[in-house]
Amino acid sequence: MEPIIRTENLSIQFGGHRAVDGVNFKMQAKHFKSIIGPNGAGKTTFFNLLSGELKPTEGEIFLRGKSLASDSSIERTRKGLGRSFQITNVFPNLTVLENVRLAVQSREKVRFNFIKHYLQYKAITNEAVEKLEQVLLGNKVNAVASQLSHGEKRKLEIAMLLALNTEILLLDEPTAGMSLEEVPTILEVIRSIKEQGDKTILLIEHKMDMILDLSDSIMVLFNGKLLADGTPSEIMDNETVQNAYLGGLYDEQLIKT
Ligand SMILES: Nc1ncnc2c1ncn2[C@@H]1O[C@H](COP(=O)(O)OP(=O)(O)O)[C@@H](O)[C@H]1O
Ligand SMILES: [Mg+2]
Image 1 (cartoon, rainbow, N blue to C red):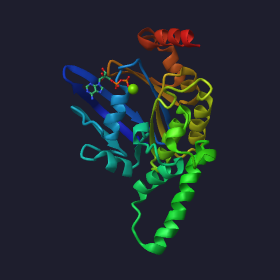
Image 2 (image 1 turned 90 degrees about the horizontal axis):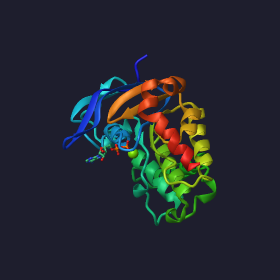
Image 3 (image 1 turned 180 degrees about the horizontal axis):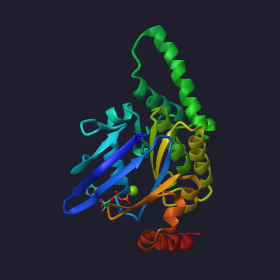
Image 4 (image 1 turned 30 degrees about the horizontal axis):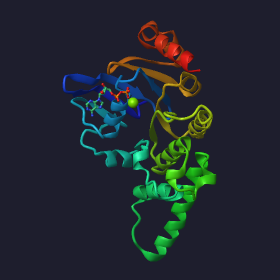
Protein backbone atom coordinates (compact mmCIF):
# COMPACT_ATOMS: atom_id res chain seq x y z
CA MET A 1 0.00 0.00 0.00
CA GLU A 2 1.25 3.47 -0.85
CA PRO A 3 2.19 5.47 2.25
CA ILE A 4 -0.09 8.44 2.95
CA ILE A 5 2.98 10.53 3.61
CA ARG A 6 6.66 10.04 2.99
CA THR A 7 9.83 12.07 2.74
CA GLU A 8 12.88 11.55 0.58
CA ASN A 9 16.24 12.85 1.80
CA LEU A 10 14.45 15.67 3.62
CA SER A 11 17.01 18.22 4.84
CA ILE A 12 17.22 21.80 6.01
CA GLN A 13 20.29 23.79 6.83
CA PHE A 14 20.37 26.80 9.14
CA GLY A 15 23.73 28.50 8.62
CA GLY A 16 26.25 25.71 9.14
CA HIS A 17 23.84 23.46 11.00
CA ARG A 18 21.70 20.71 9.42
CA ALA A 19 18.66 20.70 11.68
CA VAL A 20 17.01 17.95 9.62
CA ASP A 21 19.48 15.79 7.76
CA GLY A 22 18.54 13.35 5.00
CA VAL A 23 15.38 11.98 6.59
CA ASN A 24 13.64 9.17 4.68
CA PHE A 25 10.39 8.50 6.47
CA LYS A 26 7.09 6.97 5.51
CA MET A 27 3.79 6.33 7.14
CA GLN A 28 0.65 4.37 6.30
CA ALA A 29 -2.81 5.90 6.65
CA LYS A 30 -4.50 5.51 10.07
CA HIS A 31 -1.18 4.79 11.69
CA PHE A 32 -0.01 6.37 14.98
CA LYS A 33 3.65 7.27 15.01
CA SER A 34 5.55 9.09 17.74
CA ILE A 35 8.73 11.06 17.21
CA ILE A 36 11.24 11.11 20.04
CA GLY A 37 14.68 12.63 20.40
CA PRO A 38 16.54 15.01 22.70
CA ASN A 39 15.93 18.76 22.67
CA GLY A 40 17.37 20.29 19.54
CA ALA A 41 17.18 16.98 17.60
CA GLY A 42 15.11 18.61 14.84
CA LYS A 43 11.64 17.30 15.71
CA THR A 44 9.78 20.62 15.51
CA THR A 45 11.76 21.58 12.41
CA PHE A 46 10.68 18.29 10.82
CA PHE A 47 7.03 19.26 11.48
CA ASN A 48 7.66 22.76 10.09
CA LEU A 49 8.96 21.16 6.89
CA LEU A 50 5.96 18.81 6.61
CA SER A 51 3.48 21.61 7.23
CA GLY A 52 5.19 24.03 4.83
CA GLU A 53 6.25 26.66 7.36
CA LEU A 54 9.82 25.94 6.26
CA LYS A 55 11.15 25.00 2.82
CA PRO A 56 13.67 22.17 2.63
CA THR A 57 17.23 22.85 1.49
CA GLU A 58 17.14 19.41 -0.11
CA GLY A 59 14.71 16.57 -0.48
CA GLU A 60 10.98 16.23 -0.89
CA ILE A 61 7.72 15.42 0.84
CA PHE A 62 5.02 13.32 -0.83
CA LEU A 63 1.39 13.27 0.25
CA ARG A 64 -0.46 10.27 -1.24
CA GLY A 65 2.39 9.98 -3.74
CA LYS A 66 2.33 13.61 -4.89
CA SER A 67 5.08 16.10 -4.16
CA LEU A 68 4.14 18.99 -1.87
CA ALA A 69 7.08 21.11 -3.02
CA SER A 70 4.91 23.85 -4.50
CA ASP A 71 2.13 23.81 -1.88
CA SER A 72 1.83 26.47 0.81
CA SER A 73 0.83 25.62 4.39
CA ILE A 74 -2.78 26.51 3.58
CA GLU A 75 -2.83 24.24 0.52
CA ARG A 76 -1.32 21.42 2.57
CA THR A 77 -4.05 21.82 5.19
CA ARG A 78 -6.65 21.71 2.43
CA LYS A 79 -5.09 18.49 1.15
CA GLY A 80 -5.35 16.89 4.58
CA LEU A 81 -2.14 17.70 6.41
CA GLY A 82 -3.00 19.56 9.61
CA ARG A 83 -0.66 21.03 12.12
CA SER A 84 -1.66 21.77 15.70
CA PHE A 85 -2.30 25.42 16.45
CA GLN A 86 0.09 27.08 18.82
CA ILE A 87 -1.41 29.16 21.57
CA THR A 88 -0.19 32.21 19.63
CA ASN A 89 -2.86 31.38 17.00
CA VAL A 90 -5.62 31.51 19.61
CA PHE A 91 -7.51 34.79 20.05
CA PRO A 92 -7.18 35.40 23.80
CA ASN A 93 -10.19 37.72 24.12
CA LEU A 94 -12.60 35.49 22.23
CA THR A 95 -14.44 32.61 23.83
CA VAL A 96 -13.37 29.03 23.42
CA LEU A 97 -16.35 28.41 21.12
CA GLU A 98 -15.59 31.46 18.94
CA ASN A 99 -12.01 30.30 18.47
CA VAL A 100 -13.08 26.85 17.30
CA ARG A 101 -15.80 28.38 15.08
CA LEU A 102 -13.09 30.45 13.38
CA ALA A 103 -11.06 27.31 12.76
CA VAL A 104 -14.11 25.59 11.20
CA GLN A 105 -14.78 28.68 9.08
CA SER A 106 -11.18 28.93 7.92
CA ARG A 107 -11.82 25.52 6.38
CA GLU A 108 -15.29 26.17 5.01
CA LYS A 109 -14.82 29.67 3.60
CA VAL A 110 -18.42 30.58 4.26
CA ARG A 111 -20.11 32.30 1.34
CA PHE A 112 -22.17 35.28 2.34
CA ASN A 113 -25.76 34.47 1.58
CA PHE A 114 -28.26 35.43 4.24
CA ILE A 115 -30.46 32.31 4.57
CA LYS A 116 -27.68 29.94 3.82
CA HIS A 117 -25.50 31.95 6.14
CA TYR A 118 -27.87 31.38 9.04
CA LEU A 119 -27.98 27.63 8.43
CA GLN A 120 -24.26 27.50 8.12
CA TYR A 121 -23.91 29.49 11.31
CA LYS A 122 -25.82 26.78 13.18
CA ALA A 123 -23.95 23.98 11.45
CA ILE A 124 -20.61 25.59 12.23
CA THR A 125 -21.56 26.16 15.87
CA ASN A 126 -22.72 22.57 16.24
CA GLU A 127 -19.52 21.30 14.74
CA ALA A 128 -17.39 23.53 16.98
CA VAL A 129 -19.25 22.29 20.07
CA GLU A 130 -18.76 18.69 18.95
CA LYS A 131 -14.98 19.22 18.61
CA LEU A 132 -14.88 20.86 22.05
CA GLU A 133 -16.73 17.93 23.58
CA GLN A 134 -14.27 15.59 21.94
CA VAL A 135 -11.37 17.29 23.75
CA LEU A 136 -13.31 17.37 27.05
CA LEU A 137 -13.85 21.14 26.95
CA GLY A 138 -17.64 20.92 26.58
CA ASN A 139 -18.03 22.71 29.91
CA LYS A 140 -15.84 25.65 28.83
CA VAL A 141 -17.44 26.73 25.54
CA ASN A 142 -18.26 30.20 26.85
CA ALA A 143 -15.05 30.78 28.77
CA VAL A 144 -12.71 33.47 27.46
CA ALA A 145 -9.68 31.73 25.95
CA SER A 146 -7.15 33.72 27.99
CA GLN A 147 -8.72 32.43 31.21
CA LEU A 148 -8.16 28.75 30.53
CA SER A 149 -5.57 26.78 32.45
CA HIS A 150 -2.49 25.71 30.54
CA GLY A 151 -3.87 22.22 30.02
CA GLU A 152 -7.20 23.57 28.81
CA LYS A 153 -5.38 25.81 26.29
CA ARG A 154 -3.62 22.77 24.85
CA LYS A 155 -7.00 21.05 24.53
CA LEU A 156 -8.37 24.11 22.74
CA GLU A 157 -5.46 23.91 20.30
CA ILE A 158 -6.34 20.27 19.61
CA ALA A 159 -10.03 21.16 19.10
CA MET A 160 -8.99 23.83 16.58
CA LEU A 161 -6.83 21.29 14.77
CA LEU A 162 -9.75 18.80 14.69
CA ALA A 163 -11.95 21.60 13.29
CA LEU A 164 -9.77 21.65 10.17
CA ASN A 165 -10.94 18.07 9.47
CA THR A 166 -7.58 16.96 8.12
CA GLU A 167 -6.77 13.28 7.85
CA ILE A 168 -3.22 13.75 9.17
CA LEU A 169 -2.66 15.38 12.56
CA LEU A 170 0.73 16.73 13.62
CA LEU A 171 0.86 17.16 17.40
CA ASP A 172 3.96 18.85 18.83
CA GLU A 173 4.37 18.17 22.56
CA PRO A 174 0.72 18.54 23.59
CA THR A 175 1.67 18.06 27.24
CA ALA A 176 4.46 20.68 27.27
CA GLY A 177 4.26 22.91 30.32
CA MET A 178 1.32 21.04 31.83
CA SER A 179 0.91 20.13 35.45
CA LEU A 180 1.14 16.42 36.23
CA GLU A 181 -2.58 16.28 37.06
CA GLU A 182 -3.48 17.63 33.60
CA VAL A 183 -1.46 15.07 31.63
CA PRO A 184 -3.86 12.09 31.95
CA THR A 185 -6.77 14.01 30.39
CA ILE A 186 -4.67 14.94 27.35
CA LEU A 187 -3.68 11.30 27.05
CA GLU A 188 -7.37 10.41 27.18
CA VAL A 189 -8.19 13.00 24.48
CA ILE A 190 -5.46 11.73 22.13
CA ARG A 191 -6.43 8.12 22.76
CA SER A 192 -10.07 8.86 21.88
CA ILE A 193 -9.00 10.55 18.62
CA LYS A 194 -6.89 7.50 17.81
CA GLU A 195 -9.69 5.08 18.69
CA GLN A 196 -12.11 6.89 16.41
CA GLY A 197 -9.92 5.31 13.75
CA ASP A 198 -10.06 7.86 10.91
CA LYS A 199 -6.86 9.83 11.56
CA THR A 200 -3.18 9.40 10.78
CA ILE A 201 -1.33 10.83 13.76
CA LEU A 202 2.25 12.00 14.25
CA LEU A 203 3.04 12.92 17.85
CA ILE A 204 6.16 14.56 19.23
CA GLU A 205 6.40 13.82 22.95
CA HIS A 206 8.87 13.30 25.76
CA LYS A 207 6.66 11.28 28.06
CA MET A 208 7.71 7.68 27.33
CA ASP A 209 4.80 6.04 29.16
CA MET A 210 2.38 8.01 26.99
CA ILE A 211 4.31 7.19 23.80
CA LEU A 212 4.42 3.47 24.59
CA ASP A 213 0.72 3.50 25.39
CA LEU A 214 -0.37 5.13 22.10
CA SER A 215 2.12 4.37 19.35
CA ASP A 216 2.00 1.82 16.56
CA SER A 217 5.55 2.89 15.76
CA ILE A 218 8.23 5.25 17.05
CA MET A 219 10.87 7.12 15.10
CA VAL A 220 13.96 8.54 16.75
CA LEU A 221 15.58 11.75 15.57
CA PHE A 222 19.09 12.54 16.72
CA ASN A 223 21.13 15.49 15.42
CA GLY A 224 18.63 15.88 12.60
CA LYS A 225 19.09 12.29 11.45
CA LEU A 226 16.59 9.45 11.55
CA LEU A 227 18.31 7.09 13.98
CA ALA A 228 15.63 4.39 14.03
CA ASP A 229 12.02 3.74 13.13
CA GLY A 230 10.16 0.68 14.39
CA THR A 231 7.60 -0.79 16.72
CA PRO A 232 7.79 0.36 20.36
CA SER A 233 9.50 -2.88 21.40
CA GLU A 234 12.00 -2.68 18.53
CA ILE A 235 12.88 0.87 19.58
CA MET A 236 13.20 -0.03 23.26
CA ASP A 237 15.51 -2.93 22.36
CA ASN A 238 17.55 -0.99 19.80
CA GLU A 239 21.09 -0.68 21.10
CA THR A 240 21.96 2.41 19.08
CA VAL A 241 18.87 4.17 20.42
CA GLN A 242 19.63 3.10 23.97
CA ASN A 243 23.19 4.33 23.78
CA ALA A 244 22.34 7.58 22.07
CA TYR A 245 19.19 8.51 23.84
CA LEU A 246 16.96 6.29 25.93
CA GLY A 247 19.41 5.77 28.80
CA GLY A 248 19.66 9.50 29.34
CA LEU A 249 15.92 10.02 28.90
CA TYR A 250 15.05 7.46 31.56
CA ASP A 251 17.51 9.05 33.98
CA GLU A 252 15.87 12.39 33.27
CA GLN A 253 12.37 10.95 33.92
CA LEU A 254 13.46 9.25 37.11
CA ILE A 255 14.78 12.54 38.43
CA LYS A 256 11.53 14.33 37.53
CA THR A 257 9.12 11.81 39.10
N1 LIG B 1 14.30 29.05 12.24
C1 LIG B 1 15.47 28.60 12.69
N2 LIG B 1 16.63 29.24 12.43
C2 LIG B 1 17.83 28.77 12.86
N3 LIG B 1 17.96 27.64 13.59
C3 LIG B 1 16.85 26.95 13.90
C4 LIG B 1 15.54 27.39 13.48
N4 LIG B 1 14.63 26.49 13.93
C5 LIG B 1 15.32 25.55 14.60
N5 LIG B 1 16.65 25.82 14.59
C6 LIG B 1 17.70 24.96 15.16
O1 LIG B 1 17.52 23.66 14.66
C7 LIG B 1 17.78 22.68 15.66
C8 LIG B 1 16.58 21.81 15.85
O2 LIG B 1 15.57 22.54 16.55
P1 LIG B 1 14.12 21.96 16.83
O3 LIG B 1 13.58 21.40 15.57
O4 LIG B 1 13.33 23.01 17.50
O5 LIG B 1 14.44 20.76 17.84
P2 LIG B 1 13.45 19.89 18.75
O6 LIG B 1 12.03 20.24 18.40
O7 LIG B 1 13.82 18.47 18.45
O8 LIG B 1 13.78 20.25 20.17
C9 LIG B 1 18.20 23.46 16.90
O9 LIG B 1 19.61 23.50 16.93
C10 LIG B 1 17.61 24.82 16.67
O10 LIG B 1 18.35 25.81 17.34
MG1 LIG C 1 10.44 21.00 19.55
